[in-house]
Length: 313
Image (cartoon, rainbow, N blue to C red):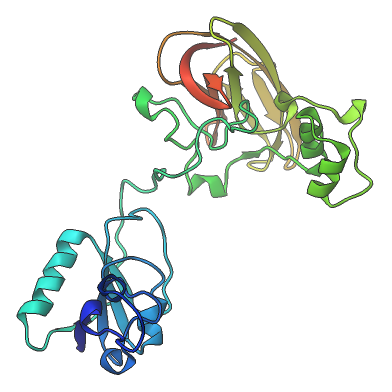
C-alpha cells in the first residue's frame, strides 16, 4: 500500500500557482518532497506527467469528461467518475494516513462492444457528400442513422471480398473534385501527375465499399449508377448472390484474387424528415456476407440534414 494524497494538499508553494492548479495537478504545481512515493488524487484527466515528474508511483483522477477516449499513461493510473472520485476525496479528508494501491486492470467481455463513439466522423463526407466516411447499415432508430458501422471487427479480418483502390483511383477522384495540378502534386508528392480528360472521374467511379446518394435541392429526383470491382479473397470457388437487384446479380469466382465488376443504380427523391435513410446490398455465398451500405440524404454544405426516400433498382 502507498500513501494517498490530494494534489491540492501537496502544493509547490515556491512557484506562482493557484489552488486550482494544485488540485488539477498542473505541470510544476506539486511539491516533489511531499509527493515522492505516493499516489496522487487529481481533479482532471490528462497524461499525468506532473505526478510522475514529482516522484509519485501512481495517480487517481476524477473526471466525467472523455468517457470514450483512450489514454495511455507512463505509470499506474486510473480514472474515476466524479461520484466515485468524491468518495476517494472524502476518504482522504476523513483518514489520518490514507493509503491506496492501483491493481492491474482486469479485462471483461463486454457484449455491447464495439460501438461508435459520440465524436466519431460519421455520415457523408463534408468534402464530398457522395462518400460515406464511416460505412453504415440500415437501422431501426432513424435518430441514430449514422451511428452504426457496416461490418464486424472480427469478421472483417477475413471478409471474403475486398474493394481495391490504389493511387491512380484516388487521383481520378481528386481530379473529378476539381483539384488543380498544383494541388494534386502537393498531395501525391509527384511532379509527373496531372489531371486530364482520361483521368477525370466522378466520385461514383471511386471503388469504395459504400454508395451514397445526396442532393442539395429538395424535391429533386436523382439517379446515380455506381460501378464497383470486388476482389475474391475468400474461397477459391465462390458464388455470391446479391440481396437486391444489381447487374449482374450473381458473381461466380473461380480463383483467389479474381476480380469481378458489378453496377448498382440508385434513385431517390427528397422527402420530409430530419435524417437520411439507409439500406444495404449484401453479397452472400453462404459463408461470407459482404455488406455494402447505401445512404440517401439531403445535403447542405456536405452534411446530411433531411430525409430522402431511397429505392435501389
